[in-house]
Length: 157
Length: 109
Image (cartoon, rainbow over all chains, first blue to last red; front, top):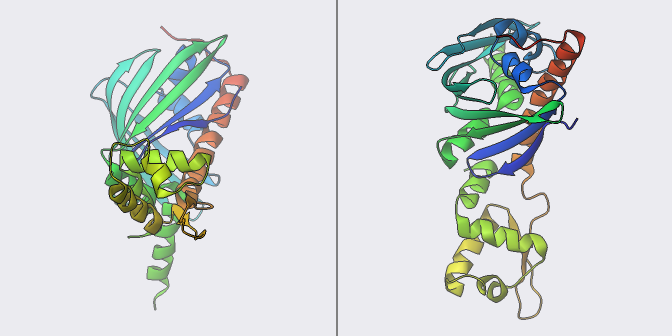
């Protein structure tokens, strides 16, 4: 099994691959069924998924909300564009911290690989400027930055 | 512009990406860099200026020559961010491995 790796990188797209032991059907369902999603998509250590709504059909929306022990939270919302079980999911998503990041278009492909699955995940931002914006508000760093600001704001007497 | 902005703006041009790919193999002078391209040396010099101010390349003086090379840790800020998201995503996928190993799901339908 190989871990997540970056196989291609452009100025506004990134392609990752990850291998799994289970079949494409199983991995596909793990990305579309809320009861399974909630068990693994927990994000950074110390966070839990508070809310997991996922209407996995073309045009359907999803909304995931995470919270940590200090009560800080962030969310990801998105829409499914194309679904082809067990081969491919195309969706758009953005993160809210609380301001939304630019729309990230994500194509996830599941291909049988021996008795397992090779997953290829292609993230595309609209342009290089959007990539910059995502980098600047990106994941943990962005969250820490926002929370650092929140600390500053709330510590003013 | 901060360094990530400058990095990405510099990378948004295909000629500059080709120049970086060339410099990834070895240091080179403006004439050597310009050789494979159908553009003039002054145009290449202009691209080199952009790359230099973005901190992606460095130039040194060697007699009459001013060879260019990739800056050490040129892609540091971008790499740092990518490492962060890659490790967060990998933590999720490792958890998925565990969930599936502890409770094998039969494909439904």
